Length: 114
Image (cartoon, rainbow, N blue to C red; front, side):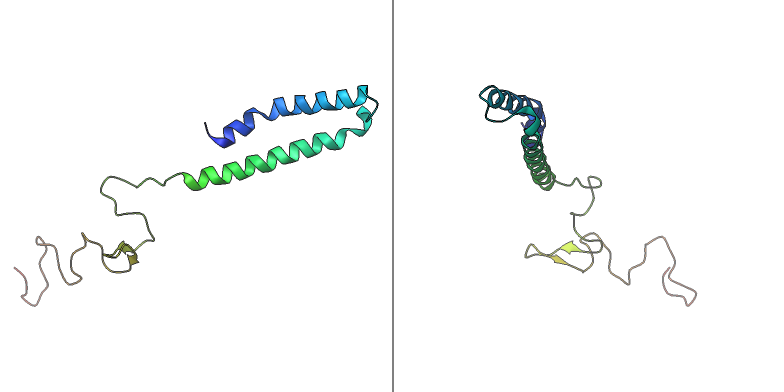
């Protein structure tokens, strides 16, 4: 189970336990209910901080999906993996050479091409 989901599920039971502790302290004449409101705020604050930390950790562990099956690996636009495992700004592995033209298109009016 995800830690964030667990913390969200125990919020209610924790508040009931805090209420029970303040009832016990009221019964023993240690603290009255009127002065116990800071305990509720502290318990809620600690739970909210724990939930936020668990949410941030869960978001960093989610892998990003690719755009489609033939998509290049995730990285910055225009960058492709190099042989060493890093990223370079060269043309991609499936990109043609910069001077190449598609075979079905003529080169130009000067007679080059077909």
